[in-house]
Image (cartoon, rainbow, N blue to C red; front, side, top):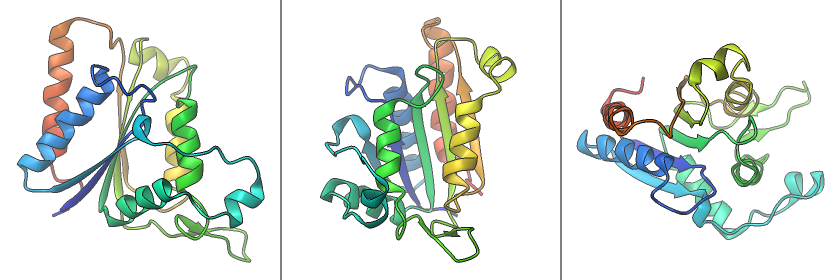
Length: 194
């Protein structure tokens, strides 16, 4: 059974009343109730610079806060990611975090074949995306493109698989629907991740 779980809360707003924070907290509570060890990375609480060039990404030293985040990710057997859909994609601060943390030498290693070695293989993930629009419109009309990109172009690229996704639309909806989602996240945090 998976014992070590790292949650990454990708909402750039530190206000804990945001629904994404509540979903992540319910997931963490469910994981702890199932006997797992849980670490939480809240992007809004981290202060780090943007990467501004390929040389920084390839050769630069990660700032201490990013090195600590890498330690939490390396420690994990399962990673749960929560983020809101902003302008059809992940929020800029969350993307900047991913660019910092998924550096060569930690998440991947370039090889002569042109395909990178996946240094985070052996980890699974849950991705939970919240949005104001109904989730079926995001999936049917927009093809869930940002979610697919996160899964394929980042998580699978570094070896994180399987990746299970949950899309929660109409988050400004009624309180009963929100309570149901919180209960589902609690149950999801406690289930077998394999």
